[in-house]
Length: 366
Image (cartoon, rainbow, N blue to C red; front, side):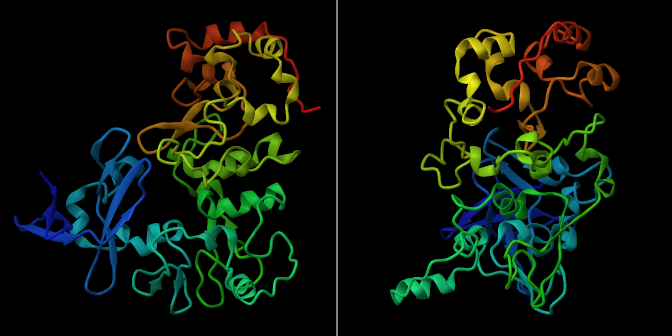
């Protein structure tokens, strides 16, 4: 036994058995996440906030060692007994806050630092997506409204282009983003110009091999936007995150991925690819019965192959196509094949034989 949750005088604590053989009690001052997994953090007297290694997975209804789940082999923090060091490897400010707080900045004007980083709110507020809107509030209060560009805060997502829309989501959903501190130490926002424009790109070669399949596809959900950017629907059309997701959905408790068409997923695609609204066309294209799982667009083109928090998420290079040759070359662990996710009793050779006889029906939007 390493840790135990306790409630004392209506406050939650996490008790940790440390190397001195004694139980040390830490208050739970922050919770992080709720839909899939909930993490807990404690604030020390010196202002540092540290994330506990033990977290609760909602889907599996059990406690997990989070660092062991996400870190590669040999990670020191994956051993929960090292948590008592309370160093930068478990610092909320240095590791988590960039995507889990609003208006994060370094008070000394530098980059990420355990001691000099502060945030306005311990969560994602409206302005992180819609931009700093103090001026808008003043205008509305004084009944002095003036027409504005859709990209000016508060951003009107219905009227901006798909690339700007995806770039705003990429503030948190792009793993390769490097935060370029603003003139006042801003770390996850910008005080002037485009509020979401302080991201540079990090070379994929600088990431752990764990983040990628050998066939070149992304393995982890932290590369969601990078996968989307590879899609022809994004490059040549107007696909954005908001095409399929609604962050303001009213059924968020039962719809954790905020899908617009959760019960009719084909509508995410047939809004543009209208030729597949016809049941016969879908069956000819998929080579499966119309109502079967094999005829759902996402089953073949967005297979569940991305590592998330103890579950598989859909791959977001939307035009992904089953490639039996890659699976033969690298094996199903390093080149998962959508066909074999359903036909688990079959192998790559069988998939190749089946696919070789298919005549493609173009999916281009008219």
